[in-house]
Length: 48
Length: 338
Image 1 (cartoon, rainbow over the protein chains, first blue to last red):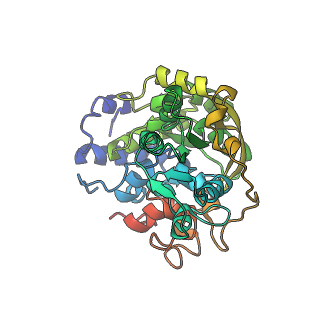
Image 2: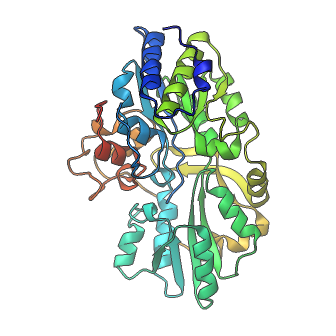
Image 3: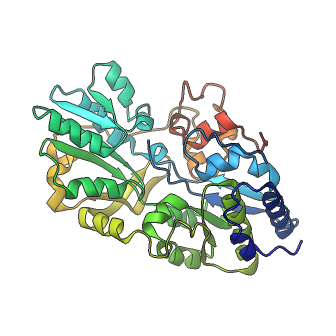
């Protein structure tokens, strides 16, 4: 793949670029390999 | 991935992850929703205080809409209203102040809730010296302390955190750093678009792989290193920090905001003689506490989509549209891409 995530940050304006999303998904899956990672996200949402 | 411009509700990470089926795309990454939204973790004792106050003839209680149906130790504000309680849903704390100005013969009590996102607006109101018939039940909570608490608790081996973009807009990057280093848990502050979450996750896995225990700011277009200094200054002027109770989690050191002594006249808990029972247990079978601590996914709760749904929520995570259970119910769960 040869994807550099830092370079991808420059593409941040393309929020909904399907090809970029596919690249990222492939990159994440390649990074993970056979390992599993537990990632927590903390949603501090503003009440409304 | 499917893209849509019609975002129903607020684009939080859990919404983005669930709605866009991100779990199904990166199956080796176990994405868990932690504490939040604020409504889900609000102290039931404080909710009950608001309920009790709303039943008094001379008091109007104001609340944000998603707090309306969350139960206190006995009732919710919606139930209080159905029993004749004086409860008004507002969109902003400023609406509550206007209500106080327009009703000088009444006491107006605002249920002030939220993380670092809403605490500055509460502080701004109090610094403007609102009318003396206005007060708040202060339920503001802080995010970094609860992250540290969960890591210290060690119920779950958390490899890394995706930090909330909106909270970070206020507090900046710095408060996360010592936690990331001490607990060897990399963190990425991410925005709420699907691409933000994917870039954030990629960065995080890369940092975990490299043993880089620091914080990366993916949401740099909004979040500054130092955060919103003006908002932080206002919060420091108005609030002290204390050990607060989080529903489903317990007492978390240094995680709550209370009014400083010079603002005590706006503290409804001091202004009124309130007697509320402090004991509270989650409804039978409800596993919102486990969902909030990331121990289970919403659909692993035995009540999920059976007796508990958005129309008849049993636990707080199904009440708010930002609750993990409500999001899983409305937008799909179990890793399914919609």
